[in-house]
Image 1: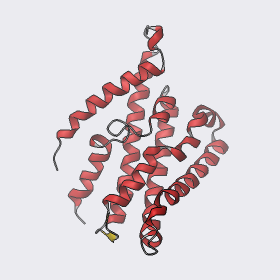
Image 2 (image 1 turned 60 degrees about the vertical axis):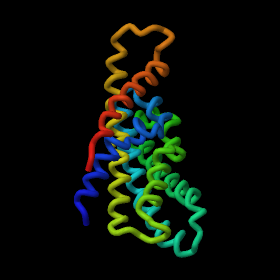
Image 3 (image 1 turned 90 degrees about the horizontal axis):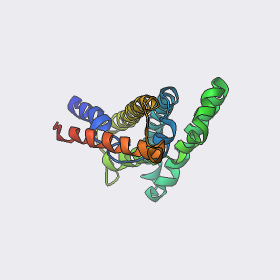
Length: 202
């Protein structure tokens, strides 16, 4: 196993190819839940769990079911079913253990099911770590790692955004820019800042 490849996946998924700030996937929950740090971190952890587990399960399904039976065109449906199952599990756990947090998430927790960032990780794994139906060396571990660090990248973006938005509560903001418009401006500036990592070479 090439340690350099693993290191490049870790750094790339958090900083260079961050799904929110570089690919602009999963913006609905990013804008909706990032008003306060606690729900933002909890959402980031939930997404990390879902991306990691769905990366593992979708790799197995793609490798041992879709490719052998030549039904790779069912990839999207299968992947969404896997993601929906994990989100349902998380929703039940959060509702049981922390009703206040469940209420803070609101509609955004079930929306992880259709969060294009989560589906994007699974699809990216099937495209990058397979070559015309042939499994690339160590692709299982790289898929799991990519799923985990894609979630960590999401968590980092949520944490930064929530910290900024919490501080903005203490300053005077023009009425036209309050809440969502200002959140999009901040997200754009953060995205520009993260573009600086594009120069990193491995």
